[in-house]
Image 1: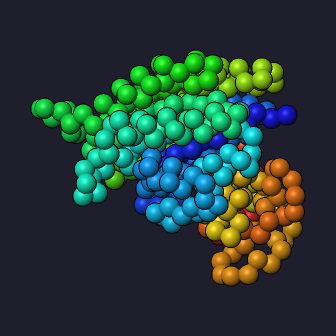
Image 2: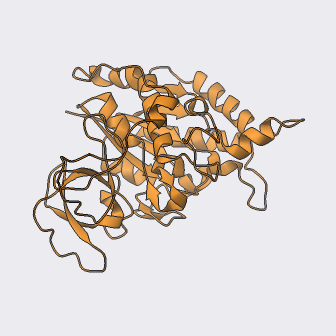
Image 3: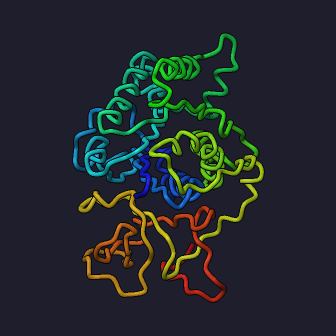
Length: 325
């Protein structure tokens, strides 16, 4: 029986880049790095504060600001039995939407509730700090510093330290990929990671949670965890995708069948069943089994195979059946 993980958060979990026209979630890479006995689903509610995550937790379909549609957090926890839930939230709590940033105490309380929901569902959880950004780094180095993110992260760390170590594991996500405007790991907006930045994030995260994940039911067949490469080496990695029958994909953004968002499958060599509507459709054979799904290209992102990220590179001469990379 496979270990099942859920990565839950905002646009930084969705893998938002290129102004929301492309996504490179780190969950598929994390799955491949942790071993063949691990499945890692993800929900990334772009633009959502921790309060919005809670307010929509029991909804069947939640539409974020992109817009993409996902199951509500608790709805997803009821659909699958997760062993570990990774929670990365709080970035949007720092924004000023005319009311100022969300108070630190409220952010941490909301995050604690998200962890409690995971525990109630039988999962253990990973608490992560709020990552850096261009704006945060700028204001945190002023005199006096603007400490909203720093204070929130200290509070997250303190909360996690008070929890049973077997139930909550702490990761300083802000240190995984520090902000830089020159290394190619960040988008021009200074808030989101680039495709290679999300790869660097996943590679840096994997060894920090491997032992905690392995402790779940003993995890007897998990692959040994190599040390993650530096951000610089990840930035040099080749991440050109190739679409072809057999390529591994992740589904996102479905509205009428949102229960399939975050699932993984292989592109089918067979023609997909007619799904109606506009847009090129491909057949997807889910890894969990069942009938071949008919999914539009715009609702698919290439997932890693055997440690690659950003897509499976086909053999020379294979046809690009989605019309481009």
